[in-house]
Image (cartoon, rainbow, N blue to C red; front, side, top):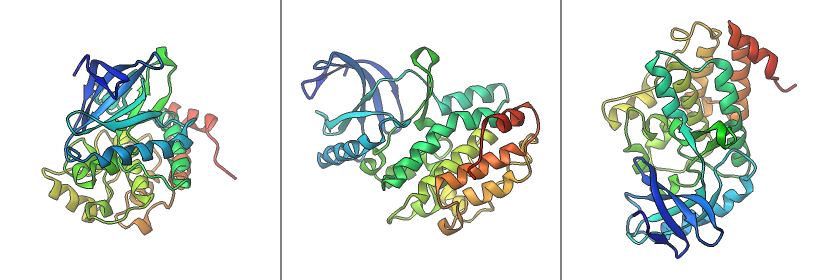
Length: 297
């Protein structure tokens, strides 16, 4: 693919990475003379050119989120192989998933302060999107990108608008150990309409993963994972994190509730309650949380 030009405008360069749903290339926008990233989506979207139009509509709707941590989408279209390509801003760094895996090598976890600092822009972006009726549908550590300090730092939320094109089945069928399936809300295992509370669940599962070093539920198969997500007792964090206040277990139970009506209703309610719990923790990280973060009211 390197050297190929898409849509007569985007010349593909080196491959930057690949995942369950596509391959990402560094590319040059020949019209703007700027470096961009191009993601080629694959899988069940093959042979479905209408997916490109849908993705472009999603990208246009996401223009209202510019200024948040959502990765900017510049264009989308059908690829020569019958799939779909997405053109975004080019960022350099590593995913939160990769960062968590690096920490795990040393049996380490994100501190409460570092977690709140990293994910606060993501929580704000999701809240802004939900207020405009936009859902992400694939919130997970691999879709949170930590921009390198040399490129300005900060975080980006990736793949907004991609999940509807891939389809729910593709997400549920992904790697059940670390992929999208670990963050799929219980109600999303059944086809049907979803609302913002599916993102609330996924974001809660992401926080759990960052604090515990593993997703809240795992399974040898998608069926096992679906069963656990919907029926197993909600996991506890307190046995794994002595630095956190005991209330973290009640937070996790509500964030990961199988019934959407028992879940935190919105991202801000989940996030503010997490900050409150973190403020009640112990150690230097909890001290920094108390000094830095403020609760509304």
